[in-house]
Length: 316
Length: 316
Image 1 (cartoon, chains in turn blue, purple):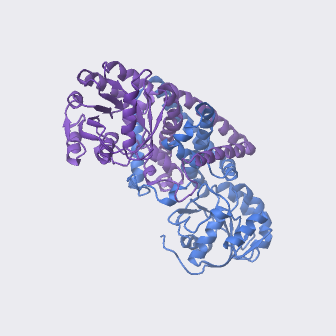
Image 2: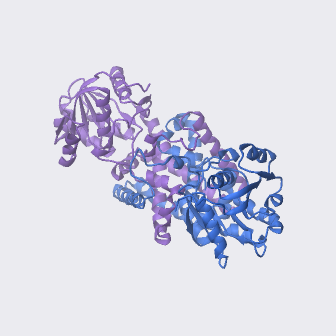
Image 3: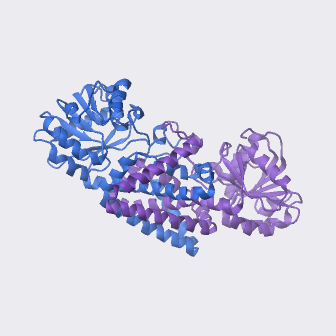
């Protein structure tokens, strides 16, 4: 499942967007020998030059259309909100038989934005690699980012199974484990596991900042006490997260509503001094945690519970 | 600051409670050669036997009073809510000149519960080592738990400075960095950095569990996406956390109120599609994160951002 599927799968890979995800895909594709050449586009000249200097692109172009022309696989590595306009730009130049994919954290709205611009004979296969760090920019990528992480494919109904299989092989070659599901379902699952936790972390950091004016440096000094995990989550790219919340609005608001209801019940138990309720609730959540350990997603060992690549995990 | 102050500081150390904190203090005290002997008490015979079998206690007693009699330093390592009754039990047998301390996450209410039972001539110096894992029990302790972690002393007004200095030397010998502050202020700082983050993490895990019935195993499968940090936090000892919230009620409710207000503003921005607000807010929280990195409390490196001992950090 995680073995590197070496061997060339595509002649030309084009990356639209050369930040953390784009540069990591490039490095991992080079590592696996998955593509013949890599072309790229970024909005700023500085980023394009950096990509050439670091060596993860063979050629870069000032427009997305120039970069995508003639490519066999085009991956949109831009914020979710920018995907529609990019698709509109590259649609007319896409080569028949090419595959277009993306790395967006939200799928249903992205599909609605992108699919109309993909011409007949080109295959659009949306994907979401669940891997990231809180860092961004072309220097932040590394070949191991996707190793043993999940990449969820959300193929369109009636899409070409062979194109899906080719993209799957590509992501396996990048080191990822593959899952496949419906786009709407993906968005609900991600709202629970990622988007609402991020909204909460952002909010808690904001609250602490109010208090920081009161408590001076102590909030930071003692941030090892649990709050630091929140700040790490809350350090992710602001534009990417703005787009995530705006594009996954329905599922996010649904889960946020459930969360505040549940939090009010806990808050009321604290106010009323209902110790039995608190103990039972905490016992229950500990059981859920144990379920996760048993599912093999984490280990109980306190000193080895976190692989180094998980430490910086925050994006998407 | 973190150097091991080797050399014996107390003849007899007594630990009331032999779980994670108690057993870790014992192992660290042995490592530093800080005490002549270690006696202990735990409620259950199984725990007492385990402590002897593992070898971190020289003697154990079925009652707290028997264990504390003749001790030079007594540390209460029981849940905050149990500290008052334990103090009432051991008060009459405490040796003149002895020091009584604790490891509780909440200080003001603990002082109110314990101080009245400490006789004249015995020094009560409350302490809070900000270190823990989500594990509990006598097998979970290890000598390195307090290395480079903060231990906050909250001495009583008018307390004996020499006793405070001796306890400080002891905690430095266990490997900790020492800070000192007023008990009420400690409780507010900890509500922000630890208690409310835990309440939030517990709640989010509870919400995911509702959804888990809908989404089956996927919440667990993708729990790497940020939610897993929450489950780790939410796996801490239920009784300890019940007591924390009940004893630090005022500060916790204050901060929870601020948090829900702030979250509603964010939620409204998502509902109204206010992208500018979201981007600005997330940019601001990223700056706070950078402040923490600059304060030396964490590192920006994604692969090395978390020391192994932080990985299991969840308690207190």
